[in-house]
Image (cartoon, rainbow, N blue to C red; front, side, top):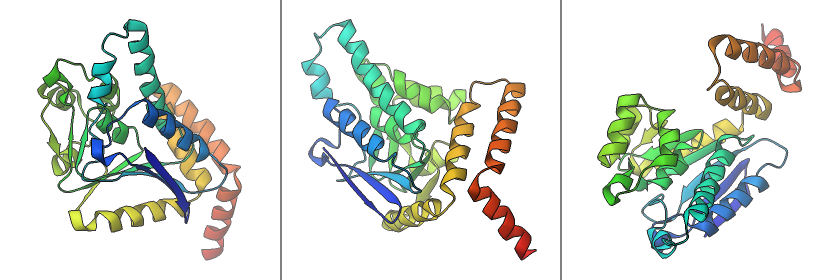
Length: 249
């Protein structure tokens, strides 16, 4: 269902269900949660989320959803919460999480990418939320999309159900970078390696503050930032960095 390996500061998590276009089912959610927990071990590095096959992730496994159509509202709610917990585990993970997207990232699979801190895509990749086309609501992914694009762009993507090309997704701020198809792997490796080489403390605290200020007032956000500033100045990485800068000067 997923494959995990670690090398050179990069913790690689690969969706390995290409025969189903890496559609998300309960087993995949559980395995991804375990992999994210395993990746919390001390030390630097980044998490790279990629996929086998031509598509990143087709979204939720519709066959599974059809088979459980009579489960009832309580189980539906619990299933939705399990996916929501996966998104939260990515967003609030202490290490940066990078999504490498080739092919299609649709519905919950697009949400999986958007939950990551950076989304690197092949030029031919497509992102979309086709839920409305089958009478469903893109509810969980809406929360993620609304935090990265404007209101009108979000409505258009969610209500039309039409896919968005990688260049267009980059243009509206949905994703981080776009690479020519043949250069995606090299671009992802270079990006991940560069990020892994940074101070793990500085990157981790930067990620923490970035998402913490989402729901704060301007004044509260500045207060939180001042506290983070003071905390960061006391870290060993910052002290060493200041000392190197002074020595060079």
